[in-house]
Image 1 (tube, rainbow, N blue to C red):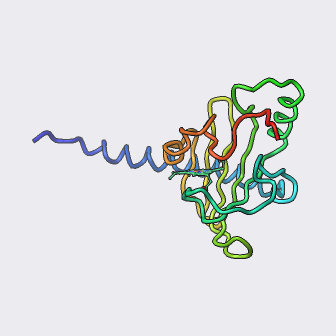
Image 2 (image 1 turned 135 degrees about the horizontal axis):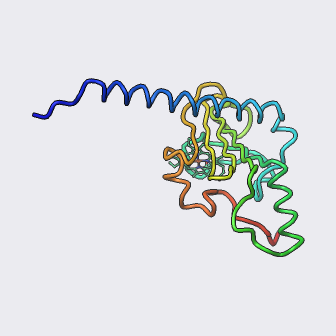
Image 3 (image 1 turned 60 degrees about the vertical axis):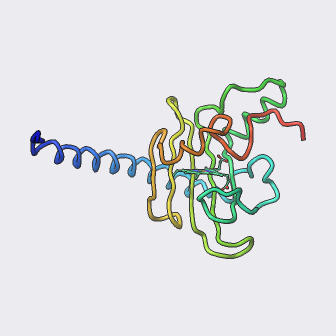
Length: 164
Ligand code: HEC
């Protein structure tokens, strides 16, 4: 039987913890930024979801969802409408925020999920009730497994311009 040096598991545990702690810090920062922005009243609703809370499409983010996009995305949509050109991806600084609820109106706030486009990919984060971190990270494989099938990893809407 090969002996695994004792420091290997310890190093893995330490490395793992520090990676999670690091993503946790970044996720917390981004969550605070989004909440400070008062996203529910200052961000636009996502394309196709302007009428507000709607039943989810089977994702693990609560039965009913509200989806918001920040100004970088609304500007990108306006630009694509004006030029008629389809961008290759959402620009850096794009933020999508999704509230997951237990009911179509009222109900409990169950999940706060978000993604932010950075230079090297999407940074993902999800909090239970907006408070307890579930998972976070750049290209977080907990999220990309499902999201890889969407255009630019976004499942609910495509890149602009839109015809309606
Ligand atoms: C089991 C598949 C699955 C996993 C895993 C998953 N999602 Fe999703 N996600 C969905 C589906 C399906 C939707 C469409 C809306 C719905 O049904 O909730 C969605 C929608 C979203 C949206 C709205 C933008 C969009 O893509 O339409 C965000 C933001 C989001 N998810 C974040 C996350 C984060 C953060 C993680 C990882 C912590 C994650 N998702 C993991 C399936 C998944």
